[in-house]
Image (cartoon, rainbow over all chains, first blue to last red):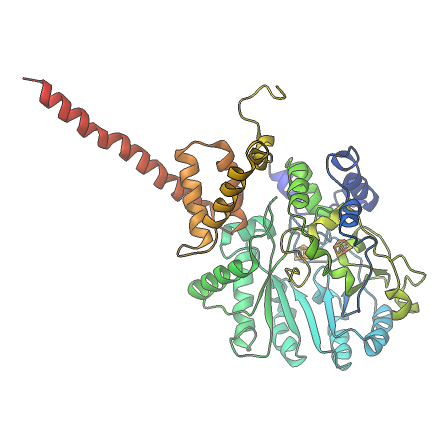
Length: 358
Length: 112
Ligand code: SF4
Ligand code: SF4
């Protein structure tokens, strides 16, 4: 049991799990119930509403993954992040990104990871990027990183000084559910971190310092209605801990990487795929995030989204690297899809900004 | 018969098919059902917990399956779900026991 637990605290890569390999995940997503016709493939499904091939709209968000290293090893992580991952963006690649950030037509810059703060050049990069005058500058912070080590304690101040928009994960307002998904002690540390962010002004009712939370289900089920979840989270966090935040984004877990591993191990894979397909909402396809986002990996390659990045599906364009970035050429591409995409179109839809269906 | 069991989890997915043999009544039922669970004077969350309790008193495996999942999706905790089941159980056992008075009445009437 203990050995099992310890194993779970490592990335699939470290465990040498077969599912650490992108092609194995893609195989799983194309075989079985999708190969024998029990369920329609995603492309078949979007053909019905004339949305195939999926193509980008106007670019709005540039999402940059600063590396897969993380202080946590959440069970559902689609990045397969953890302390044992060494893929980290170098300053050289950051410089290429900055060049793009200065010239892009995107209004939002979104830094993610792993824990982006663990990249040794994170602060330098934020400093430089914030000078580019991007309208909305997001950092996805896992909260516990702020408490993890003395050198991170001043992050709330640092974020504030750069007018960064903080987006943080919080799977539940109770300790049990949070720790089960994200690890022992994560709840208490996250609460402390939220209080510290509130203390410098983040998330307060009339504050311009935006603090949004991301909710994703801790198990093989879909997220409930975003607005009512937000109400419940706000009430509980305020009553129990005096915490304020702005919006809650309800995100569906996509069946890739560690969440796929969990689905298979817990014998929930088929039922989960069924519920995703059943909840398919053609209106959500219009606004899936790959249609307004470009995702950049730690080594500078370009993807339709962070999920495709983890599946190693580079953009279908002759431009595939940040060093040769060209927005016009990139925007004229077909988006690469597979069955994991059902996670973005279930119910009200799901993206890094939460629900998408209008 | 496709299945060797009276109850098959896969049948829950086929619930909608009851409309096949009586469209009008089926459609009316599902419309009514949907309406009942909408946010109203009671929240959808409260309704989900009531449904879970009743699912248990009715001992309907399909409903237990559906409303356990529905509860999780709404962020309802295990403790809340179990308390709801106890409410159902308390009413069920209370309903049994309160009939004891009927038994007592009858016995008292018949006995000399
Ligand atoms: S989900 Fe986020 S915080 Fe958790 S391991 Fe993955 S990157 Fe780290
Ligand atoms: S998984 Fe990526 S490519 Fe597929 S629909 Fe979602 S955002 Fe688009």
